[in-house]
Length: 378
Image (cartoon, rainbow, N blue to C red):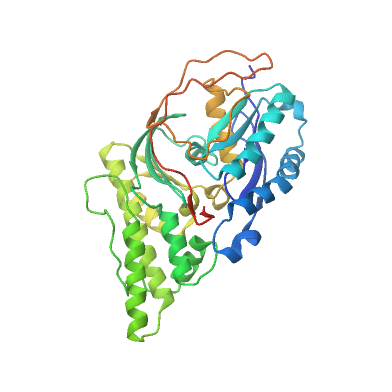
């Protein structure tokens, strides 16, 4: 096998169509992304059928653009990595179908990547020497999970949300406050103009010994606060509400992450996923890491949200450990990561046929992105 494999990554799990090429040394040769905010904005959330249609319209063009940007021939690819799940079933099917077709035509391995594993891998895109073992907090619209990562592709789940993800809580708050879509960035922008101490919201699960999270209660607290405020006839200070609400969520995320660092005696922490782009979260993490002498990794904004570079990076982990998929691989909207995962025995080179992965069986972590009444919140 090529000691420095070149991986094409494809991402279509929700409302971004993305493709990227990453070399074996971690160099990002290209990254192209098409957002669907213009399609879903008026609905206040992702409409699965519309997302699938847009992926169909754009995915071939995006993949071709990634190859052109990289300036590489198709024959230079060592494997094709594609998000297999979790996510929206129709959206995943578009990417998986193209990924399988390309891998088959090029006679290279097919690598089905779990979206969560892609986010884990994003911590090493800009900082390939980021130390392990480390704690990685994955926090997005569909996921809030804490992992102990011992080496590339070797990780253990140590905490997760018991109900809603942090990003889901931000999205719902933005909708209640009429701040538009996408909700997370809207809350972030509004909160910068407010006073976080003016209105105090509960810090869910903050003082419990568990490393698990819960964010459904804070959404209810906001709902009741707005109801009572409107009944009183007082004007809403939207900036203060957003700032106080954001502070409550961010403090819990930071406290749990550093508690995991303490418990597992590591000195490195990465925070990844769409919510890791939140400016207040990044500021608090940076402040705490500096005080505690912890090595902190925060991906650049382009690698926080869904992208194909992280899928290609995770594809390298799979490739190196011989975790290839067969041609009958299907999209899996509810695909879960194993609670713990280590390398498997390499299965040898392929002769034009990818082999089935022999990774451990999964246990329930999360159903993936939230889908309500025909809409999904990424």
